[in-house]
Image (cartoon, rainbow, N blue to C red; front, side, top):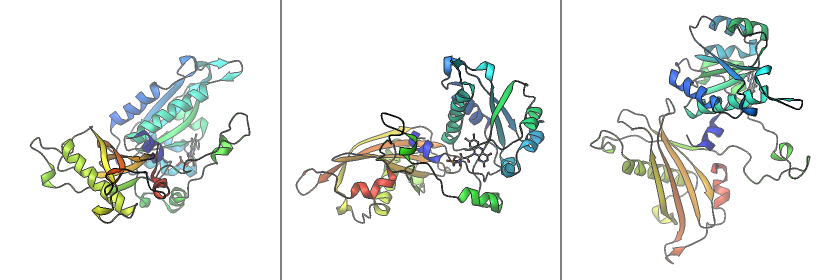
Length: 328
Ligand SMILES: Cc1cc2nc3c(=O)[nH]c(=O)nc-3n(C[C@H](O)[C@H](O)[C@H](O)COP(=O)(O)O)c2cc1C
């Protein structure tokens, strides 16, 4: 998945489906954590993975706080922690918690990248958790991460559902980032929310499949065209071909997994940047059921005055219209 999409798609939601998680997805999450940076390369993080049916599972669920009862539905729970003695200390600064946090973020993002719902929690009892997982005395558990697939709102009780539906809040950029000296707010010029993603289902037709039994890149490009046309209609309000005032100057299509006739295909796309005379779309074809990304594409549109036969500037107002859809 495109990195800006991973950042935008990560949510600490609580309605889990009971669909099991493929073991290789967990392995990839651990692999991502393994390659995280750490002070003096001490790699203090440790993870204990507990699946449904594992002997420690019931005791681990017992350790969860009442407000985290929703996490019992998650097929996998991962306890993350570290020993202070395993981390680096610089002057008086102890880095074991910091480094475990970094590794945990890599683990979370790799989970999201694979279509999983990942939710870190601090609401559990330390004594019961340590006993459940036989953690050493000098080991500090830091978070328990619920891992699975997103469920439907009905998969959660009323109170949990309300939490999931609450609007996301963040401090302003100027409150957390300073320029030059502490307290001097950094000016923010980008939209304050993660970029919106435009999504649309792409119904596969028999004719989309080639002699090799899959959708090849040439056809994938036409599927992206369908998505672009829908984006232009729904976001830009373009209704007829005559209203298109750009040319497709460049297109890159990256094949990742075969699309077969039985696959469900959905397209998501956003704009990555708007320059003086051009803008870029980034798009992915993926399976909405498990997040597998089949094909990625990037296209460059150059604004073009067809009557004059020359390149023109991006019209005023364009940036405002697509502002919410611009991701990094
Ligand atoms: C260390 C840590 C502990 C957390 N503990 C809990 C928890 O016990 N229960 C819970 O529902 N959410 C917990 N969260 C999730 C946060 O509430 C959530 O990240 C925050 O509200 C921002 O929402 P978002 O992750 O969807 O962007 C925790 C997150 C972190 C990083």
